[in-house]
Length: 223
Image 1 (cartoon, rainbow, N blue to C red):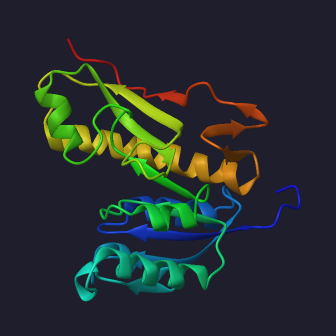
Image 2: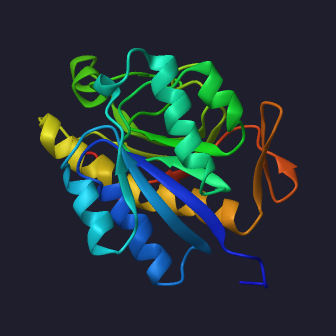
Image 3: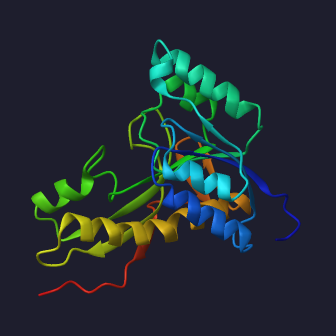
């Protein structure tokens, strides 16, 4: 990969770890120039930890409930992450909101995958909210993490039409399929030193992105 050193990556999860698995698979297939050094979870015994263990990736669980407050928790988490000297932190279904101290400590080195077409539908329960609102399209976004919840500069988005009478579970699954495309793509750009955050601007191939890269899903909207 053009003799660029492999990018050291830490992945934070809270549950199934399917996006983590996508990154593991892409790394092993030589599609992303990375070295996943460790996986951190805020919940014990989740399937994502088992995925890390199967891949022989060190895993750690730091439960928020084990600390007196968020500041103490985040200091400990940052200290553990710093010990690996990573170049990138990927929030792959990590459900804890990270405070300003943590985010600014790693500014420009944290990306998140969010299941909506940001800046619309920040926060939780995006699939249900999109369906209840009668939206025609839905998607997912990879963005740099800043102090603003789900408000950091957007890198790449995946968008699909919503099918008539589609259930929340069906829509969620189709959005997951898009996440498995755009998250490895963003990581690949970072690992090949093509992507960076400068101030609040996303820079790709030395050009400022006026809007995120958009990937259109292949699914047709049902009548």
